[in-house]
Image 1 (cartoon, rainbow, N blue to C red):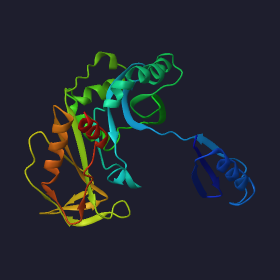
Image 2 (image 1 turned 60 degrees about the vertical axis):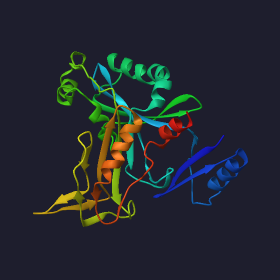
Image 3 (image 1 turned 90 degrees about the vertical axis):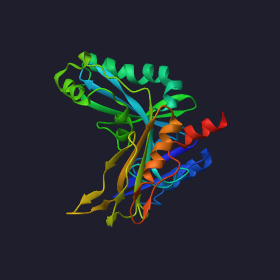
Image 4 (image 1 turned 45 degrees about the vertical axis):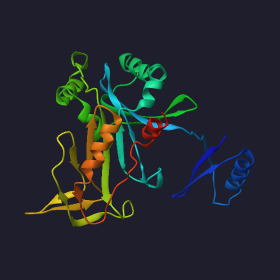
Length: 283
């Protein structure tokens, strides 16, 4: 079993993963022996290995409704290598959820819904649950009180219902009167950034955008408009989302349409959804 060590010395943080018990014990002795300064506490966590997904729900404080799944790609380079970013792309829905649906509903979503109904805590709005499946067991990594980015860009195009009444119902406690209807479709989002991201942002590069297909959508992020030009103005500049009746058609649409966007130094990952793609190719 691998362990994840996290401890703080004054204002500095030290994070390390150890592959075996002996190395872990040696590290603990070094920590409390003063190698990194005076340490009083150490946090040891089990290291989880598996596939992640983002699971969304909305709540009015009593009722909850599922709001879809997405899988984000945080690393800047293909093959999930390189530095972490704000998100280089995502796709929805996540096939992993179907194989884990019963476990996730029983061990995560239902206990959360019960706690709301029983008044053990109060929350209204969007909950983004980060889930990792390790050895066929779903674990909660985090809760976020927001829509994710770029998860929202890939989930919302699949929503047939108007989102505004649902959000108002969350504030008024009437979510049980709202129906959320979804397209029976797939979507895939590809983020375009500057070639120096995430070390630095892209600034003042002129952006050219051709005619996108009807099924594609473009979301602006790090852009700005002058009197006659659209310019880059951030790390992740924009995102193109393709939709379709299969993962393959959604992916093809996203990549075909992002080729219609251009600015100096533009870069993007070519393998968003690689887990699904590799499974499709192996069938």
